[in-house]
Length: 124
Image (cartoon, rainbow, N blue to C red; front, side):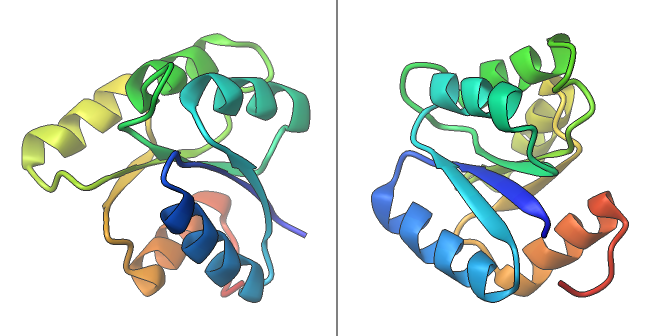
């Protein structure tokens, strides 16, 4: 089963997105802040990380930079999630090391396409 790590501080967003992804056949691990996300990624080695960029303790940009700088997590695909839809926000996510970017509220079909493309899998 494909394992995703969802790093999201908003409880309602975590609950909604994790339930929808589980219904699509993914195992979903959850972290509530960037520091916890980096630790969980190192310990659990998920197949992909969904990283909210506006997080407490350690924001998503720095958390992604740390994942990229750490042996064992440096190649885990990361999709940055943000409510900001400006081109500069996309660029900022990619510069931090995200492999792709998506806006909130999440449109599940679009996000699934990105997950599948990064993991090289068919419909989950």
